[in-house]
Image (tube, rainbow, N blue to C red; front, side, top):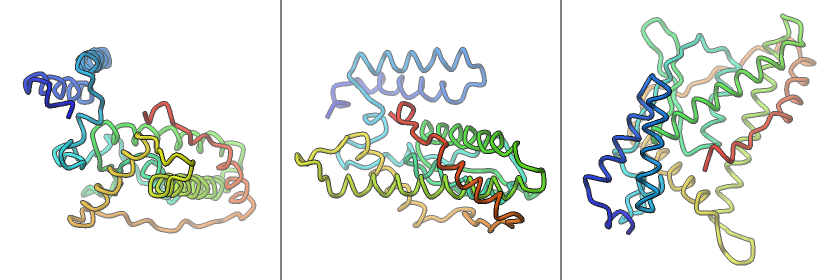
Length: 236
């Protein structure tokens, strides 16, 4: 067990640096804190797996699971709600909608702080990409186009998650080995889903969108096939 050789105070210092890096509104200070955390982790041969996982039980540490509510809020349209599950399929996180008193929808991810922050960024990137692609459509057709695009992305991401699970459960590459990072994602995803089933919070409800133009929807669905979902460097 790697963490057994690290003084408790040093492990706590690493955790504080990680916390400072994600909770600091000053980018320079956040970067400095992350570099310090990475330096200390490198000195002791630690990885994020050592910080996140209980080496005795092989489960994600409960104190590492947080509800991360994005700072931005929208009156989320149907296509945005269809897009919301995509980070869940790409990362070991789950998602919920948290509605404030004014009925603004906050997109909330559940998982480790680092995974949740990445999920928010992926959602923003994909949301922006869909909006950019839809600019070639007539104004009255844009929602149909974006809904088609979001549907395709959701189905693609879901298929990727299912492939990942099958690979971990039934390694078929001849030597029985599985990418440790992939296996870790499945373990974390399963535990977070289990926790949400035991303590349901808020809502994951989504409403079907109105398709005013089937042609625009079809064009959006085709465009969704071309959007990059391979965030492999970011997911490591």
